[in-house]
Image (cartoon, rainbow, N blue to C red; front, side, top):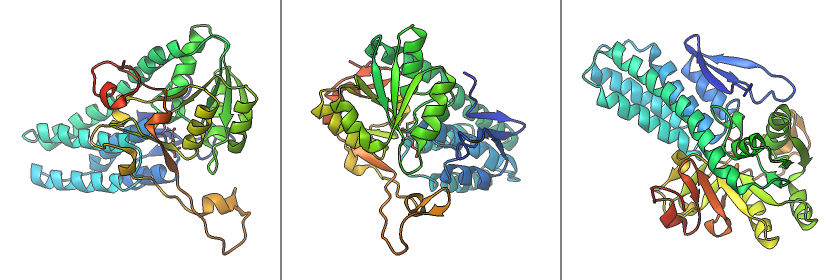
Length: 346
Ligand code: MRU
């Protein structure tokens, strides 16, 4: 794929600044830990798997300049860097998963000289990036079996190359189906308030030659009622052990509407998004974001001063509305409490 969402280049993290798309395709080089955290909180880099990769590479950037000469001092600095990144965004478990993996790798090697631990951590972060590419291809291959020639698929937010190392999860399935010569049309929700659907998914799918139709979020019900949608396919930020799924705000609405209209509702994600330590969705921390995202459009105020705003960035789709969860391990069907723990999806 032509899109390079996040790569390691010139001792820094090179990312596409997604806050500028689709008007400008601009790359940023993140050399300082503060820049990495800012890029995450302002959604210059976003999407659960990409956040995991950014966090892992963020550790590399953060400890690059460490002058620690021994393991206890280095461990302390590492922990500070981890804590700083942990506090950036709360919902996507991949971010925490990647940070834990980086700490574990350092601890396993704590008897080695500090420059060597730094090198090992860089290797680990790049491994997380490369594994994500492989993982997405596998998700695509497993999930494409659910897509038929001629299908019209509705998606929400952006679970594509821009949300991962490349290829994407939900969109990866569509890429694979297209590679298999299936003709697919995609309806894209604009995804208020930050418009990841309109700005990112529509752009990404058009680059890859898809037929794309953009709708406002609240049109989804009518479009389903008109019989235009065969399947719904979304990504995930965190999946609890029982299959309850946190994803971009508006996903729950789609899932309920899908049930009413007898439309299969699929979630695609890497297994690193499945958090088996959380029994159900009520335990998932859901990010609340700035009121400005709703009261302003392109920096221009559109709502009256003094109005109260509620701006949750994610919602929970209860497992009962989900037809299947597709990971690199397979297609997991209900009861998810069993099939997510199995070696292969059922
Ligand atoms: O706030 P965002 O843009 O980071 O939200 C992203 C999503 O909700 C995606 O659907 C999810 O992270 C899956 S990405 C493969």
